[in-house]
Image 1: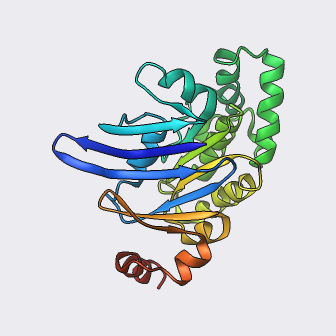
Image 2: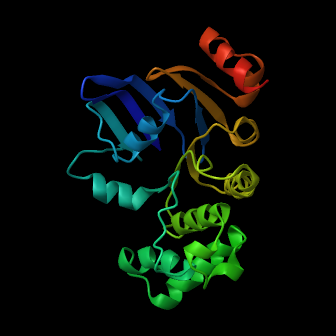
Length: 240
C-alpha cells in the first residue's frame, strides 16, 4: 500500500531524512517512535507529499507520487490527523464533518450528515454534533478531527503525534478511539510517544534516530528484545 525508496529530505543544509526505505502492507498498523528531531513526522509527511522528498520515491497503492499527480492520488487514498486539531471555529462539529464530503466528494447534505453521525458515534461524540469547537475539550476536539478524517473514507490514515498537544487527562480518550480504529480494515501509520499504544496496536514498530530507521519489528520483539544499542538506550529511558 505504501512504499518509500531511498527517501532523502533536506531543509536547507539540514539533512533530515537519510535514505529511508519503508514498506507498509494494506491493513497494516505501523507505529513510528524515536526521539524528538529523529525525522518521524517528516517521514509521515513525505508519505502524502505534505513534504516533497528531496530525492527518492514514494509509492501509494502502486502509483509513484510526483509533484503533478500528488493531489489526485493523495486525495483518493489518504487522510491525516495532525497534532493540532485544525477545526473551523465558526462551524459546528457537524458542519466541520460534512464540509469535505459535500465539497470534495460531491455528496448530498443528507448523505454527508449520515456519514458524519456514523463516525461521531465511532468516536463517542454524537451528542456534540451541534456544538462549536470552542466548547469542546482538547481531547474532544481531536476526536472530532479523527471523525472528520474518517468521513473521507480513505484507505490510509496517517497520525502525526495526535496526542502531543493534549492534557494528560484527555490523552487516553483519544488513544481509546485509535485502538478502536485499529480493528478496522484500514492502513495506519502512527507517529507517537505513547509506548503502551504501540505495544497494543502495532503490527510493526519502527524506531528512528537522526533521520534513519535503525530498527523495526513486531512489538514483542521491539520492546522485549531490541537489538540496536540506540534502541535499547531509548527504551531504557522511556520505559522506566
